[in-house]
Length: 294
Image (cartoon, rainbow, N blue to C red; front, side, top):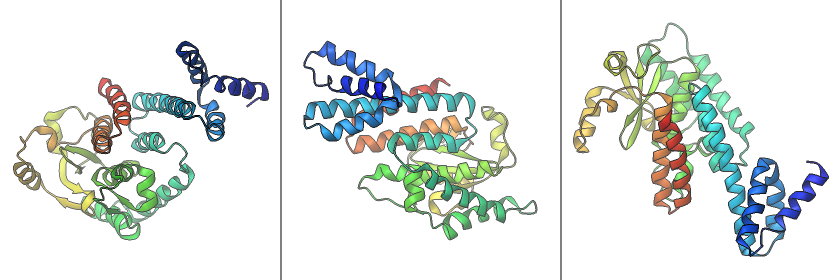
């Protein structure tokens, strides 16, 4: 950043405590328009300013800039690269942890991918292929489910799960799904209400919206939260009967990555609502709206 530009930013930051609402909004809009490059200077200013109102305004401004970038990246992802589920998960990880070390995260990811790839070969049956994935993730890798309630949302983000080895049914399922898709295994998400499961299909599905033919592609279902346990349609019917749900089609059928991502964001909304973080629920509502329009 050029020195003159940094001076300009600092001069604008000095005006964030202005009591005139019109002046504050003008300054805030100007800083926002400068984009992510101003965040470092804003963070430095935050630590040196004692005034709580100004600190709050800086926090809000930093969040607005970061969230704007998340919306931009998610929009680009859903229009150009929805088949790359990992990229979508990384975007959401940045939403929660904008300063996370993605290099360390990707090292862990690439090790999982490499170990699964080494265990796969063309002679394995679909069940044997899933056994390889299970052995790498839950045997060698030690991934495990958690139902911890304290700060539960953190177990929903890929960075925390890969770092701690613990996740919930959605985050572990998303990691499992993204790895399988990267390795060419025809595994898809299933939007079973209150629980995210996967389905192993006969082959890659080119048109995920053709509901009439999807059920014929199903071989078996996978529960990543239970160490990749495989099961049949009967177990889903038993589950929805006990839960008092109607057996609607999408509880049994593979879903596309955009649908999976939208359901994931709704799951996050519920978690943040439980913790009282309404502003994050509002953020997620905007992202869900973007996905629902796709």
